[in-house]
Length: 124
Image 1 (cartoon, rainbow, N blue to C red):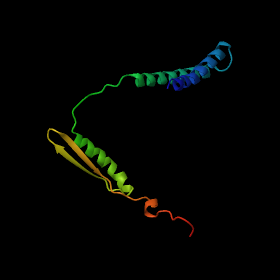
Image 2 (cartoon, one colour):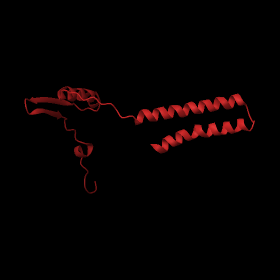
Image 3 (tube, rainbow, N blue to C red):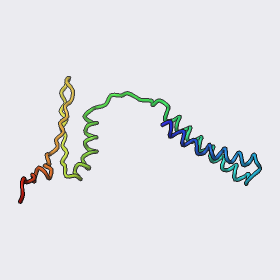
């Protein structure tokens, strides 16, 4: 990650140095150079802000959730994709008071092409 950040900061820094040098030497259009320097500095500022946002520790909130609801939501999210592939996804949730919850996921067996048509041995 550090190499990516350094690379992303290096490009606008090179532009800032180059345009600053041209202004110092009295070469080129000063307004164009100032605009390029400002754009490059703003690019660097965005990179630094994104890096700091990424580096901040996440604030996590712990709360109790019903596992049955979570598993059912995940299964519902997967059902459409499974059905597109010809798989009938079935899930049963059994609660055992004091012992927890049991989840049973049922996927029908679909033999592969090789299982349906085993290779023949020898010549035909």
